[in-house]
Amino acid sequence: MGLIAGKGASPSGGWARRLERGFTLVELLVVLAILALLVAITTPQVLKYLARAKVDTARIEIKNLSTALDLFLIDVGRYPTQQEGLEALVTNPGALERWHGPYLKATSVPLDPWGRAYQYRVPGQQSDFDVYTLGPDGNATGESSSPLAKEGR
Image (cartoon, rainbow, N blue to C red; front, side, top):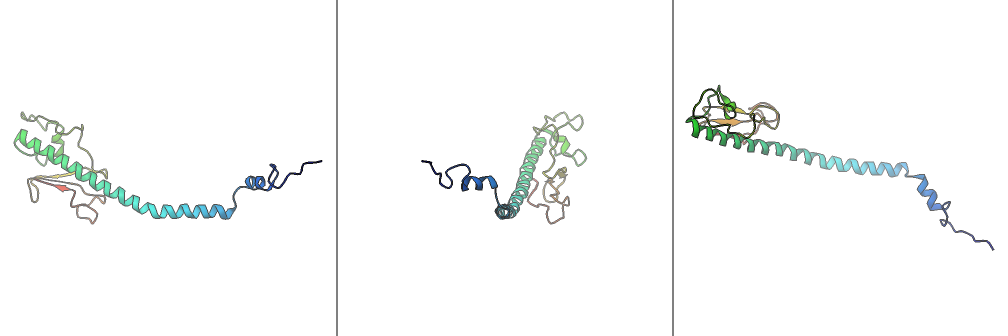
């Protein structure tokens, strides 16, 4: 008496052949379409988040620079001149006896999140000084420059 194997009971059965064939073109296209849809939905949200994070970083750095400028004022009795600039926070601008810096932890003045130098103006337009960034477009009057990323005292 011989033993008769049913369909799928041996490796040569139907289910084994199905595994060996792989995926059909339609199945692969459906998966690719789903992935493309997910990317199309999530990419704008991620880009918005990154842009907002850069503005928030600029605000925090401007507050740190403003605090350092206030410490410079306490020690020296004045804010750095326009010629001395923000560099006066990390290096003595020239034989100032009461300079007790550096006033920043970094060894140089940080760049804004877009890779440009922070702008410093003394006297400021509405305060003793202005520290601001030119924003992502590099133009202080541009639509994308952030008026909130400005600080003065």
